[in-house]
Image (cartoon, rainbow, N blue to C red; front, side):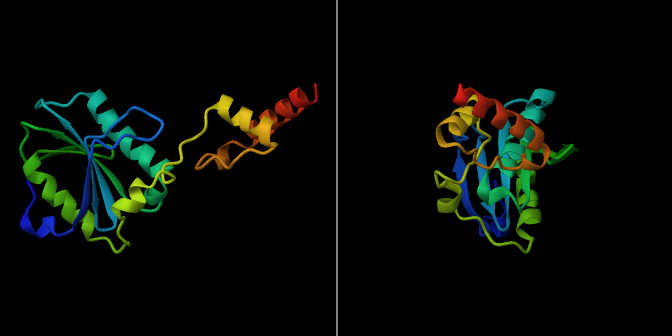
Length: 173
């Protein structure tokens, strides 16, 4: 599956990684050089738009909510298992056959970034998804403060302030 030169650059392969607090699982995550490949396998020649969206969503969620993925490339890869070679790119998603995966690994490992290590990636505090609105309101009501919402802070101050006022008003009543 991998060329000999690429195999030495793979630090870890994590199979069926379950996104914490969710039930979604990319088929594999390769921690390579300074980046990650999020791999979704499909047993058909032609992937659907839903398959492409699924691979893109895994990469997006890791990029936005995983501590070790914030400042490095997270490359979504869709592998229709009967396919051969590099099929095409749909947005950020590379659609490739198994025989072309080593080429993508080479592209990622050529970056001058520190490696991601498996223990750090799998740390239980590494994945920080957005709290649900109800959970955030409960935290605010119980603790009087709202934890920082990762990657959403720039777009949410008016909504957070409104929620804060509502919760404080409810608390006094």
